Image 1 (cartoon, rainbow, N blue to C red):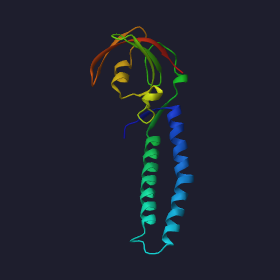
Image 2: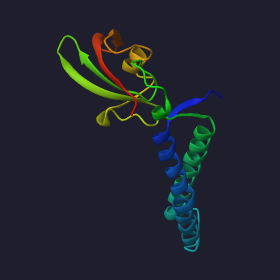
Image 3: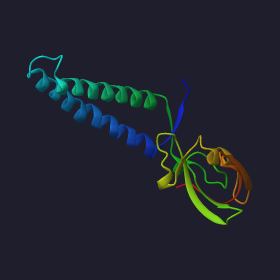
Image 4: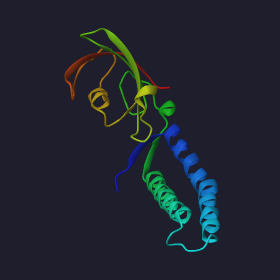
Length: 158
């Protein structure tokens, strides 16, 4: 399986979720199943079926997180030699040329992306257009809404 790029923060967030699922959520679900079994006939016991469904989702998420972490290429951007080049994990200030709107984005892994928090996926059109470019470069990004031109104002390694 290919390596999955992930920031240090993203990996820590997944580890915390994994710890919660294994040590808190899984035992809660097991207790729910045990309690539901005590109510008798399992065929018509909705509490039992709900708990089993929750168990399936929980175990699936545990496997998914473990797979991602085992294939993660964890990048600590603070340990990279600073340059003006846009790389995975860097924070980029850009200006949309036709509107003069300025935005600041951090390029992160798919699991970490949250547009409302200005965290964009490495696989997003904007990030793909910015990777490898430098401060001052003009970049044309093909988006679902058409081509958009940006100017890279600043690259930070936070």
